[in-house]
Figure 1 (cartoon, rainbow, N blue to C red):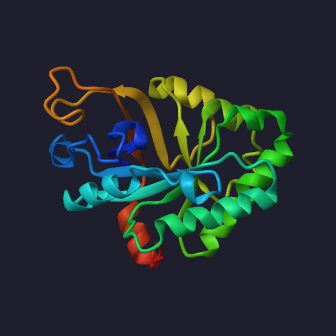
Figure 2: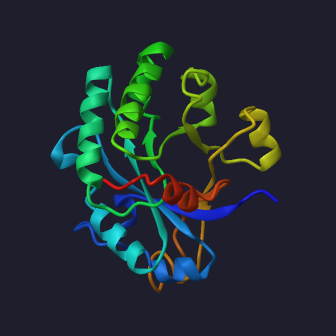
Figure 3: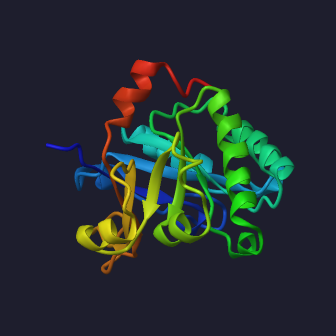
Length: 225
């Protein structure tokens, strides 16, 4: 039977304005969720670190969840992608991450570029992060995978796919056999998890991992930055 491990992903949008998390990670784990993917930041400047990254990380760690991280890119050139990679590496340095780190490529401003340029940007970022010793993957939508990226050139990296459909429809939209993580909805509601004490829980992004990333990363000795 294929591995299926449940998780969520988070950013500053699930935190207070001062960066304190709104998520009860202990209750999240009690609901059967084993991992979280946390946005570390976006862009290339120090001020673009996600204000909730530290709080989300500390609370998830204390709850015993597996943790990965991701970076939202605005890079328009390979040089900018490489600068973003260094910012991302600085933000995650010293963190105990036992799930992959991902490049999130979806910003509409990048649609003005060519497929080759977008793919070059993704490769430049992910290769630099991988060279630093991290298990690195690509986050994109099924639409981006089909229409905006050359997935053959990116085949070295696992894919974390956003596709809000049932599994049959997802397989129609994304025809590749191998998938690392599937973000299957942005409408997950879990009682008591977010926000704390809310009678009607707010929505969260829900994911299924198809690999035991924690075991894979530990065995390979990765993510020790």
